[in-house]
Length: 62
Image (cartoon, rainbow, N blue to C red):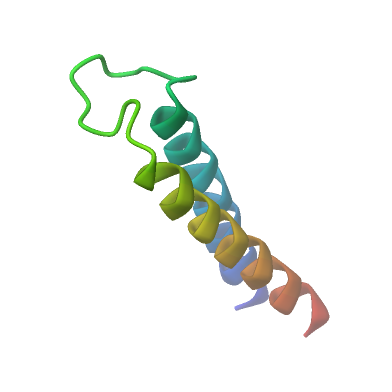
C-alpha cells in the first residue's frame, strides 16, 4: 500500500509540473493543447503537485 501511494504521489507531482509548464508556455507540447499559455493551469498544476508531495510525505510517515 505504501509503495502504491508513493507511486501515485510521484505521478501527481509529475503531472502538476507538466501542467504548470504548459500553462506558463515553457512546455508547448502538443502544439494544439488548450492549456498552453493559460494561467489557470499554472495554479491547477501547483495544487496537484502539492497534493502529490503531501501524498508522498504521508506515505513515507506510515
